[in-house]
Amino acid sequence: MAEMPHVMIVEARYYAHILDEMVRGAIAALDAAGASYERFAVPGAFEIPAAIRFAVAAQGQGAREARFDGYVALGCVIRGETTHYDYVCNESAHGLQELALRHDLAIGFGILTVENEAQALARARIDRKNKGGEAANACLAMIELKRHFGLGRR
Image (cartoon, rainbow, N blue to C red; front, side, top):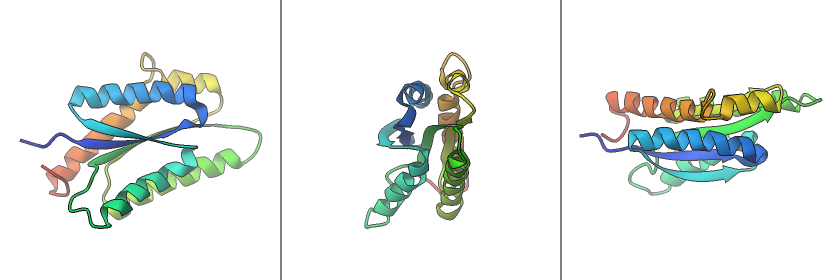
């Protein structure tokens, strides 16, 4: 029987009210799957890849087994008046993809990139698009795929 997954949820708390909704969706999905999780907060979406990398590096410092089977990255970037939006969106997505490929990580991508708060809330709310739940389910699916190929705990 497969061991239940243990997941790291990384929450970029810059838009706390939006993230509260996303986290609710992610936790509901993980609970429904019987997965355990730990939550970690970072200031913004740009910092999410570094937080995951810290966890991976800590495991490499003598831990016999990976602490987390997968990672759920939750954040929100709302377009403003400058190009800052583009840099944060691109670099956070690129950082997460690079981590997944370089370290064989199961990552659920739940960083909203929207034009305004109304779009963000529509995507975050569990009774609407529930992107937090989608990110958690993507993470769980990738954990299962890793296990299929013998890359994770069974």
